[in-house]
Image (cartoon, rainbow over all chains, first blue to last red; front, side):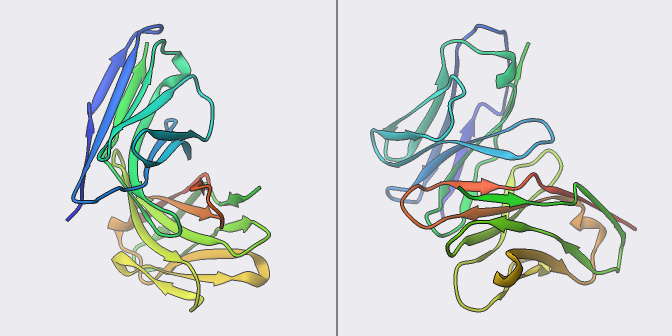
Length: 111
Length: 114
């Protein structure tokens, strides 16, 4: 069975500080990977997707970047956090005309 | 461009009643449609999907949805509702082509009172 692990579970960071969030997918070879962002109580916004190692496509610009250094790993990062980055970040795999499976998410609070 | 509309931000009903959560979409070609559920403080879980074929699709947790091309809708249904169904429900659309983009509606918060 496939498993998706996200880290950290939660973060409290200062404005202007750097950020790195990660996820790892086990049990699935060459998965399509995604980062989503959810404002508190809001809808989900797709941020990035990757269909192969080393290639990441940006869907919306939020002063964030993503990388896929390994087949099973997806990293979301920024060098300078903004207050507007607060929210719930979800990594997911799957998609392309079928369902996506979400990780448990990282709750980020920027203060 | 595609969009998804969930017109009801909040739905409240009594346990044992039938529930129907509305979803409409805007997309000129054949859509791929999904429903997800988010329990408080948790991530999203997949409920069901419409890709092609039968317009009534069944999913997990006793839910089903009906795809109606005539009015561009994909409403989620369950009868009877249980208090444990209280959650936020999201409808989502993926269009054809190679863009891997999933567009979500704003969600409907369902409260089922015992």
